[in-house]
Length: 287
Image (cartoon, rainbow, N blue to C red; front, side, top):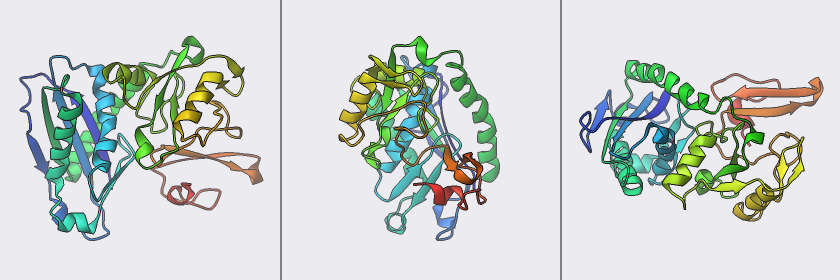
């Protein structure tokens, strides 16, 4: 099945606050254990809203959805996977409640920026495909903003602990050359997120003294990771697969694995459904 989530800025006169639109069939039409397409399109309008905030707001969907009892959300952008428990379905949870949750949470946390929020949820295959096609250039434009930046050009990185609700020891370290593990946050997103919410999941991390330029290891980064990983991770290397690589949650886009027989490495992306050279598909290779 296909799935995509996209949040975009709108003008105040373009949307009605609280408008939740459902296209296609509701959850009742799905078979137990089956799958259906899913598209979530959120539009936010506000006098202080900026297009630079779109990716930040959008990434919060992961946290908002997982806070709902019996609802699981993993992935991001066009690699989303959601599950609903049988008990939650029996309790009356339907697609419109996704919109209700997102509308309420965005207003609750970003009320100073979001004056109006509308949500469209669809599982109509054609509509989902249309949203996928519309979202691709939006995602690309966000990523292109940091294309010419390097890790050496800044003295501060940004952390992300948004996924600690189910990966409590995981800390992402976002640098100009390295997106967050989910692929949805870049360095500029982390910077803007901190400006919006100085006590939130994205905190500035001054690099400090460089311990190893080749591996990408800095004193203050190690200190931050140690303190915010429940003191379970003591060192972090930004550029090494073997020595102190970054921890992970369940939202990564690709797996990079060592293949000893080939004296090399293998990369498999989330969309690939077949077996890999290490004998496992993506879903089984997830640690």
